[in-house]
Image 1 (cartoon, each protein chain N blue to C red):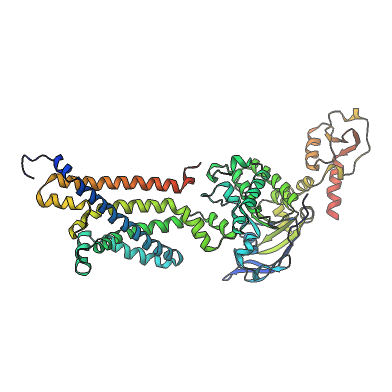
Image 2: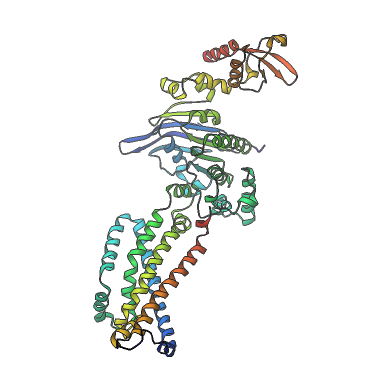
Length: 325
Length: 217
């Protein structure tokens, strides 16, 4: 695993107004290094505007944006953008450039030597699961939506940016491909240690990808917390409604069987038909299997090691105790 | 035409082969100069219109008026100033190319998808780099469509410049009219059409070579 080399991004009292309309209203938050911070909220809440102010595609009306302590407003915008990865929903690959040339965009702008660019392009294409020799010289029109989206991510990562800005990058693909792209991206982000600011309107995506989630409404930050905190303690009714009435189930998806209290092992013959659960399984999946079985219980095993019995009341208790924290 | 005279006298064509060849060369020269100069002027005006959008109206309005002036009248009007010269011919020919070229250059650049432009800016292209490396290459197909129409139109119009002592194949058309001689008329007219077809085909091949991505997918 690569050393963490992500940048810390700090927004301080950032405001953007268009005439009388305030799109972003005194937004302050810190995106920690090497983590994924998600901006989420209903349409028009200012999440995309906030994201685009970080690389100065939009200029803030007031406030400061710091990347590793450096105020971005004092830097040359094009120089700044070359150091920040940028991925958008419609991808925006250059139709007239091959996949290899697309990925090479920023390294070329930075004047890397040709050999280094070529090596980096092949490395990235492999990283996103492509065979470089087969894909390098194709044009974007020859790729599927999911493949284009992957290339978009690879292009943004080409010059090894310490920060990536992503605006609904998986919004335009079907749910199955989206799920796979999310998993691949998480893997990639963890190994590369890049800081990511990620905009979405999909709360499930936010919970899945976000280390921290910022919920915005009408240009203001309503709550900024880890997914677990957000689900357990929504700041107000708006957040509670936004995360959904099934937030209990969503929390279970974040918790594992191993973290739950168990009954001591009982005679396996009394658990006839009960599902076998592993400690790493999410409580949501465990619950689904238990409900489907006659005993409403689960046998927790870590390989050959029989650890105990999980019951519905354990799960309920866990949700309640976490609520009181 | 004189009764009894055949429609095409092949012996005349054979004996005038050198002359025909020379007029073809002249025709092509008039066309190439007109389209190239026209493109340069149109390109500069298009960049201006793209940078200052409120100039687009006046520019297309002015070139639109130029385009509607009957060619016969325009060449006649130029004679007092520039005489029976190549310059007179080119002023007229160039002015007819402008509208179509400007419209296509501007439409081509404006037709570049918003997200492509956004991605280019977001990755750190300067505005100039966006124009030259993204917008103009992507506009090539539409720009070439304009160049093709301008070229074909110009090849046809070149024949009219025979009236001011230029004209390429138009020389034969004029000769045919003056002498009631169908062979010359047909050589001039067919020659001009043939040149237009060949020029268009060549431009299609050039465009294909320059835009390989349009055939992908």
